[in-house]
Amino acid sequence: MPARGNSLRRRVRSLGGKIVRRYRLLPGGTPDGLGDDDALRDATLEGEVIVYFADTADSLYQLRTWYGPLRELHRTQGVTVVCSDSRAAATIREESALPVVTIARGATLDAIILRSEIKLVLYVNFNARNTAPLRSRSAIHISLLHGDSDKAVSVSNQVKAYDYSFVAGQAAIDRLERYTSLFDAAARCIPIGRPSLDTDSVPRSPRSHDRPVVLYAPTWEGGQASVGYCSLLTHGASMVQSLLNAGLAVIYRPHPLTGVRVPEFGEADAVLRAQVESAGSLVSTNRSLQQDFADADLLLCDVSAVANDWLPTGRPLIVTRPTETQARDAATALLGTVPRLTADEAPDSGRIARKQIEHDPLREKRIELTEYYLGDTAPGASLQRFLDACRHLAARRDELWNRIQKNEGISSPDPS
Image (cartoon, rainbow, N blue to C red; front, side, top):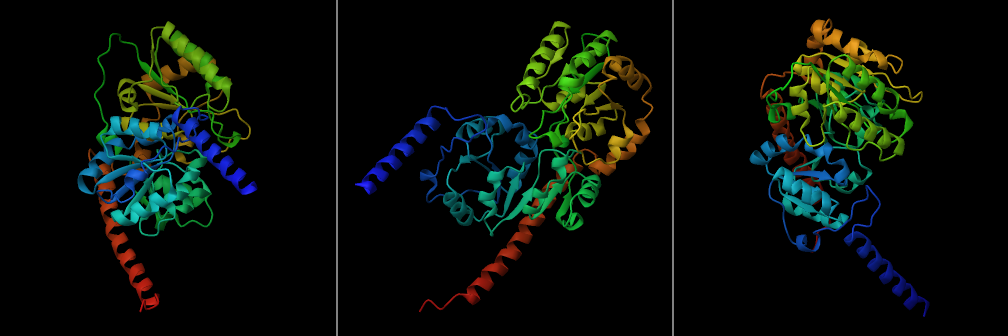
């Protein structure tokens, strides 16, 4: 009787789990696990590359920055995006035009990697669920992340889990050497620049006014206090009002994760959106980052990858200084070069921004830093480095995997 009761409870739990997933009752950020596993039981994936994305749609911004380069890679090596969440998979399929599957079970993933001769697995974040494909020995595992920045996450110890990291430039290698122990950054990092800057560039939109435009692009509140760089609560309202009072137009680009951990940041975001819209300026939620870059004369942001990606524009940059006492950054030359805006200076932001736009006293220093952070920024150069690096590592994978199989064949017992 107890065994029968346990079996019944397992069936009830299984049914309950299916109902919760099917009717989208899961807590935010939890993949629904509605996989294509049964349909993939004997299937193979075309091409040599998997992009593994275990997050929900809330974090799709991390993958979107790679859509353009991945489409180019798909033309040469074949790319499939593997998700853990069917909702995210549907969105990626529609937005990217790349092949996408949802896999819920680790056994399905392991088997399909082997059957398909997948050579590279790419990752755009450090999600704990990345351990599922990382078990595979038959592929080379590459961390892309979704931007190069002086955030502490850029030097996370999690980088050691991956065979290689594609980084933007020498600054990233130096940052890892400085802040991460027992990690040979020179050997395991491959600088490729930011290939999305090649694939996603857009022209400036027509203007209906002659006011200089400031792009305010804060980061989110972060997963813990040590990465609390967000300026919304401390700078946001007074800073934007000062910009408007100084005759500047504002593009406010809220971070997609704002308020997911700390509700007060979401409330501050709502207030700032209303403030910007009532002044006739723009809240950018459905535009690409590159479009916002093209339309702005100055970027005002927190410590984040947005600052580094802005460098090739050649236009002035201001980075806020966080007030969170526990916040730690992985500072490199950029944070010591550009103006840093404290919360006390926020009411004077308009004057400070106008001075940077009209005189740009740090332009030459920023230009000198661009190659250090991003390498060669000539059109197409970064994309080519990305494609070349993937092709080279696929060839290296073949050499290494053939050696492993040969060794395993020698050591295996005679089946007879």
